[in-house]
Image 1: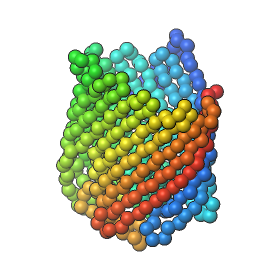
Image 2: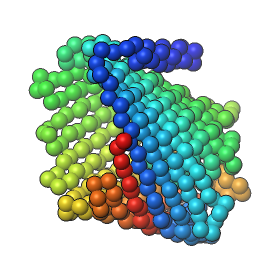
Image 3: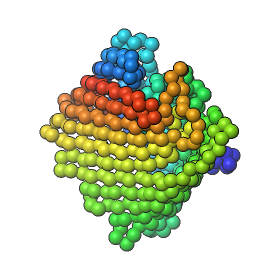
Length: 391
C-alpha cells in the first residue's frame, strides 16, 4: 500500500515538473512579494497553567517572502516565513520558528489538472496546535512535514473526478518524543453540477491510516453533500456522512462508528465579509492516538471607515479521544484527553499607508478538562505593525 502511494505521488510530481520544464509558448509572469511584522505582546499565562501562572512580555519579528511564477497553464508559488520570539524574562523560551511551503498546479490538458502542496514547519506545539487545530498540548518543539498531491479530471461539462493523497508526519521533542506519528490518506470525489448551474452535489469516499508509536488507527469514511452559490454574496458548502475506525493500542483493539460533517457558509456584506464553519472529523493528535473532534468557528471583517477595520474570530472545539487506552502523562501530571476549548479574538486594524498597517488585538481562551475538573485560562494583548511590498 505504501509503495503504491509513493509511486503515485512520484508520478504526479514528475508529471507536473515535466509540464513546467517544457518550454511554453505563452509568456510567464514572475513576481516577488514580501511582508514583515513587528509585534509586542503581553501573555498572562504563557504555559497554560492553572496553578503556577507565568506572565511575560514577548517581542516578535515575522518576515515573509513569496516567489510566484505563472503562465496560462502553470502556477508555481514558494513561500518562506520565519517567526523570532524574544521573551523579556523567560529567556529559555526564545524561539525561531520556520515555515516553508510549495504550491504548484499544472493544466496538462483542458480536462486534466495536477496540483501539489507541500510544506515543512519547525515550531512549538502550544500556540500552533491550539489556535489552528483546537488540540491542547504543552509547549515542546515540533517538526511537521506535509504533502498533498492531487489530480482533477473534468469528465464532462457538468461532472468531474478528483483524487488526493495527503500525508503528514509530526516529530516531537521533550515529553512528547514518544508521540510521533505519520498520517496518510486517500480521498476520491465525484461532483456534478445541476441544471440550475449554481449547485454542485458530491460524493466522497475516503480512507486514512494514522501510525503512532504505540498503535494505529484505520478510518473509513463516506461523505455526501452539496455546494451552492445562492448569490454573489452568499455560498454554502455542506457535507455529512459516516465513519468506521479500527483502533489498535498496544495489545488492545476496538472499533468505533459515528458521523462526520463539514459545513461552511461564506457571505459578503456591503462593508465586510464573514465565514462560519462546523467540522466533525477523526483527527490524529499529539497525544498518541486519534480523537473525535467537533469544531465551530466564526470569522468576520467589517470596514468601519475607509482606513479602519474591525476583525474578529471565535471558535469552540470539543475533543474526545478514541480507543480504550489510559490517559496521557506529562512528567508526573496526568491529563485527560477529553476536553473542550473556547477562544475569542477581536482586533482593530488601521491602514496607515498603502503598504503599512497598525493593529491592536486581544485573545482569550478557556480550556475545560471534563474528567478531572481542571480548567485553564489565557489572555493575550498585542500590537502589530505590518509592512508589505511587491517587487
